[in-house]
Image: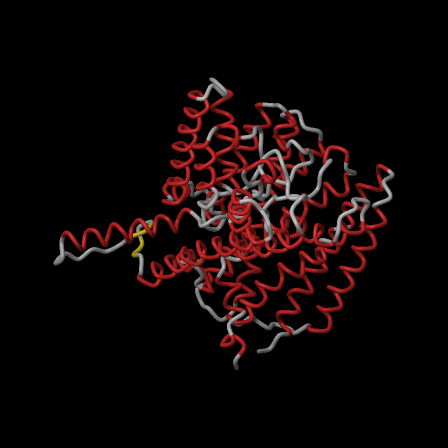
Length: 481
């Protein structure tokens, strides 16, 4: 297999990441923090290595094949996480490379799990870098979900092929064209979110960083207490609004900008997603009231915020929902796996896969009741083919299997059952905080053994790349000519 086109793309993206390191350098230089030298140094190293790789492998008008797309998709996240870890490692944080890589991978996959404490007192460069990692990761996830995964027919994503790019032999040009449209919408949402946060009382810097991590549904904050540190209902509702917007299909936004609102309002995924938010939030409001935790508007706001934060995989926190009782803990653990809509920045199994599973079950029951009947499955008005159903069921099986294997591996590293299982769930689903006193909403991942952090980092990328992308690369048949 020709690997030069793959290295060329990785080189371009690595150089872009390197150039972005100069932004935190400027932020640190403005406040006189010496870490600006770290960002300049890592920026130069990353940019030069990326540009050098691009120049050495440059091929004009060379499109990616399916196999090259698989390899590129798997490799680029690892390579970018390795370079993204350098500022954390060389800055005055005292982090090991294991911790630095964990933080970088958590950012790029928009997981939001962190090993850094004392965020309130950190220099602006590191805080901005964490926000940029999640922002770039969120954009990359949209492009991957819209332009690459549908062409690779991963986990039923072939249902979401863009009609204008329906031939499977030129993935790179399609990705570039789709990315340009997605970038405009992504920038617009980020700008609007920053303005709303600023109007709600955040400083301009806090508003910018939180806007990047909210739209990316990543969850990195500038405060140890996350969004709860601002103690503002307006901030909470701003986060709620833009977490939802980041979890809706971005291709539908293109139609909205062109004046077509109906597809967004009528989309089956969107309607199910919104209905699920309302139902789960209602249950959590009752849970708080019955347990005498919160009442009235505060209970509604905390329920909405917590449900949306976990469901979308953002991982922000305004309160420790682990104190809401056993039912709430169990419910949030289940919510961790669901996720938002396909083609968004959110994570998890995704709403549409549960819908496909339900349609398959419904058809199976009908065929049992009416053996002579002919039933056609439809999704959003289109016929649901058997290959999509098989792909979705295979994905869900592998998703659960990957979770169980990771949870078992984490248990073998000495973690207690709650930490191991919730840690595996939060890594595979790219959510952020887990459950319990150690990695729950009021804790972080810094005290875990190094081997646990490497396992969790692996889980993050496996979950973010929709499992199949990673598995296929390790199959011997993949490398045969």
